[in-house]
Length: 479
Image (cartoon, rainbow, N blue to C red; front, side, top):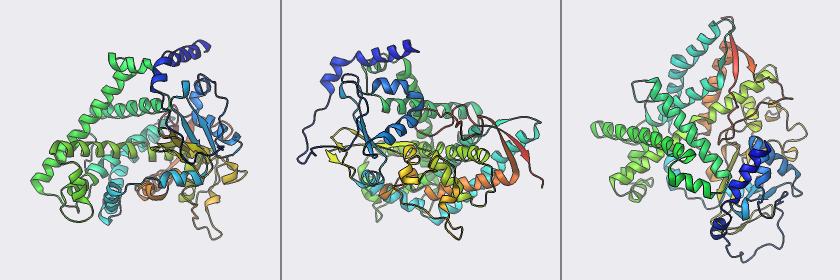
């Protein structure tokens, strides 16, 4: 293991001269504070926090939670890579989160998306999509697993594939992932490509660019090649969806009353009046530019919807078995599960100018400004002494009604003008799936062990996936 650590260190040391040339040394702001409350935990003068990152790379979110708890300010920490590369400030302060999610907001594209998400026709369409995929695919798959005596199924994998199909159907109007043939090989290749691209990109976001990374990109080998191949598969799929939808719209016509989200974006780009549509179309004046934008819309929808609800539901089912009780408050229980295991545990932005967060943490232009929803859900000062326990009752009022908290304290769906537009849709999907499964089956966890004293490991990726999946046995309830 020490040899592996040494190898990592050597990789980071190779580009020392190169990084010295690239390192940003922006001028101090006019009102730079004399002190900053951002805690700098054990940085090496040359390597920064690289060694600690290597030691804790398999428990990254818990490591940052420990650092934020130990910070004297109790709010923010500052960390960096070799020679100051990849400088980042990470916070667990609701005031800081509110500041980060409100600053520099550009609402044009969001206005269009918000209009699409809020329509009644989309909500009706979404309800129908959930019903189709539950009854035709998901529940029959679980029925088959329950009928096998002693057989087990990876519930996380089943939920992820269900989520992938439903987001493709809602966003693009295609019932099957590959557009109609339902070819397992095509679906598997696309699924694997998204996983590969997200995993590599997330790890790269946590570490500064090195000479080795640039060399592998130049030589088209290693992870650089695998990332390029994955992106090629994803782009080809996304462009095929866009071209197919454009052809259908050309044949049949399209307006903003169309049900799927992609059709609505297409209509908005061609709209000559109102709602900012013509302004969006003007940003992409050529047909090729419009196609590329719509391709990116397809990729963005899949990335947002593919693993988020499935991740939340996986941890929810594990927590239910680890904390057996009567469940008469599904919304509260799902919300509590996401407090402990947020689908997107770590989020952030890049500062375009020097700034100071409300907690006093100073930022310079080009630095990362992060917040950890995972750490915030484990802060005693935010949730009390039982912050590490699964307690759905904390979300219920005296009459059993659901009582939400400020979004900046619970940034699972972001906050302010950047609050997730698909929040209500996500809750509908999660509650529909959870209710259908719990009404039909008894769920017994096979692995990992269902104990709060030994929580499962997670994958180091952008979404909170349970490492190794969630292996369960299902038993049909008496009809």
